[in-house]
Length: 73
Image 1 (cartoon, rainbow, N blue to C red):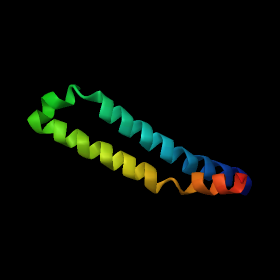
Image 2 (cartoon, rainbow, N blue to C red):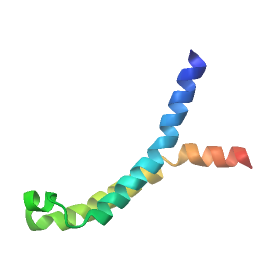
Image 3 (cartoon, one colour):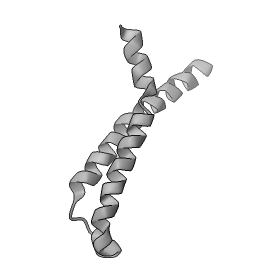
């Protein structure tokens, strides 16, 4: 069972970077979304901050991908 849990943990670690990258891109592309109606004119500035946050989170979770790339070489 330990091997299965290890594979699940590795899969989750590898899934974090692309998930945050997609969330950042989706937030950047969303632009004119209903959320702006709820948040008022400041929503455009909030989207910019969210994009940066998602891209930074993606970069911080890049470690497992770099380890895998080093292993392939």
